[in-house]
Length: 250
Image (cartoon, rainbow, N blue to C red; front, side, top):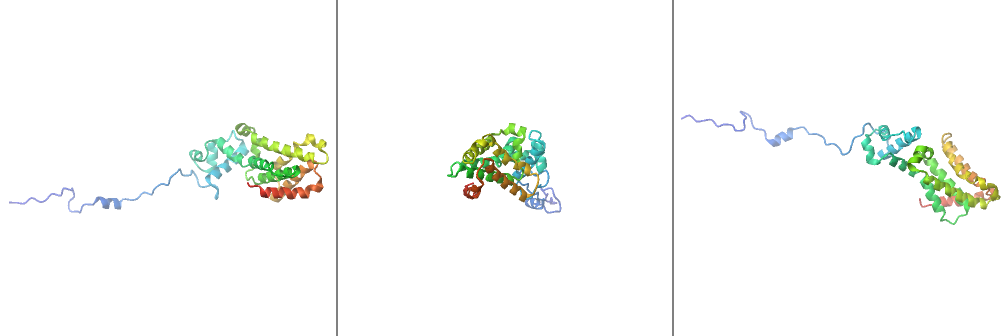
């Protein structure tokens, strides 16, 4: 009787069967993707977060071509990210504008409100506000204060904060003029104090840093001269104001 050879039920002949474990080991590995959307291009500015890059790009576009004519797609393109990625940081274009303006006029308004609680005379408050406000403007790396002059930006965000700052200047100037040498002579010129401080925006376009700070000092002194504060009291006013600024719990 002839014996029947064993049948290889695995379907292989003359070779050892490959185990599932071996097959998995030999298979090429696929690197895992990191979470989040990749940039459309490389990072534009080293040292800045994506949020700050968006703000910087928006500030440039808003001031160059206006708020209305700037789109979130353009902003994203400048940064080098997808438009959808921009919405991870900001809900809409108005939110970007609001974030930009928060760091301009608002700090000076809060400082003026704090000055109202301090036992300083009016000339010192006026000078301190001018010095603090001018310093904020000069540290504004994007010169965002000019956005308040863009009609379409005003329509979007309004100018309530700037109006509040202007009111603080007017109150301090009125009180300082009352203590000056000729209060009646300057009654119609008190609004010029705010305009004098705002003139630093134009000066930013010329001269270096030292020239800008020297001009800012001249503006602050000019506020006192405009309301006829005696020059002999300037050194004392400067000292009081500087100590107030240093004590401000910003």
